[in-house]
Length: 85
Image 1 (cartoon, rainbow, N blue to C red):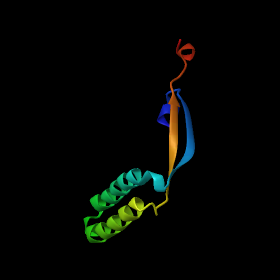
Image 2 (spheres, helix red, strand yellow):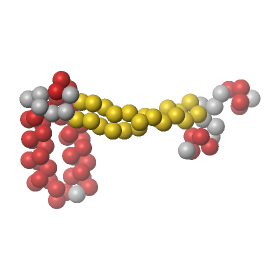
Image 3 (cartoon, helix red, strand yellow):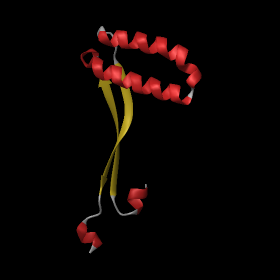
């Protein structure tokens, strides 16, 4: 990575967020962001995504939705001061 080329220590780890029924508000926010980004890229999706989003938000509010969001975490530590001296 660019950070690594600058002497930083870079650690990457896969991490999954598990959103359960007790996190309906977070599920709603995640869905709105995800669907909103899709519509930004392809506005013609709007009619389909409106129905999809409404159904999923209702499921989340009813405690019927589980979501797993896969992503990677990145930790970048600067080079030590001793190495710079």
